[in-house]
Structures are given as C-alpha cells and as structure tokens.
Length: 72
Image (tube, rainbow, N blue to C red; front, side, top):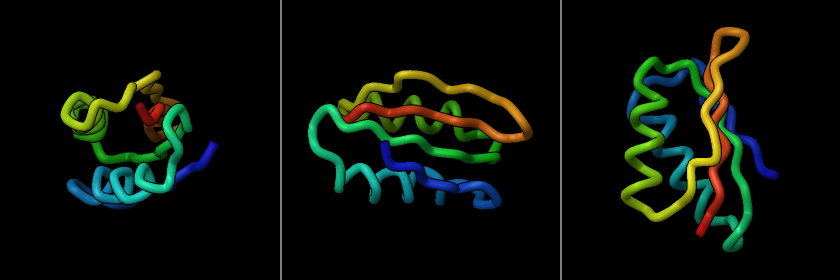
C-alpha cells in the first residue's frame, strides 16, 4: 500500500496529491492518504465518487485524517 503524507497542506493540495498518486496504482491497489485539512474528509469522498474509486475508510487520530482508497 502506498502512503501519501499531505499533512500541512491546505485545499486543494491533498486531493491533487491523491489524484497524482492514484495514477500509479493498478486496479485493486490501495492508497493511504494522511491529511490535516478540515475539508479533507468531504473532499476525498467527493473525489472518489467523481473518479469511481472506492473510499474504504476515513479515520481521525493523532491530529490528522487517514483515508484508505482502492482504485477501481
């Protein structure tokens, strides 16, 4: 699983970095994104819906969000 650390970056950079990293994944591959932007959970959900990828979960712990995405 590939991990992207977008902590300290504000909108739209966490999604820009997510989109870029997702291009390197094979179908079924998973990507974990760390972000502390407050809009990130809503943004990543919308991005997954728009692109057809599956948002497996979004958690908040230790001051940041952790999203796991599966490429479809």
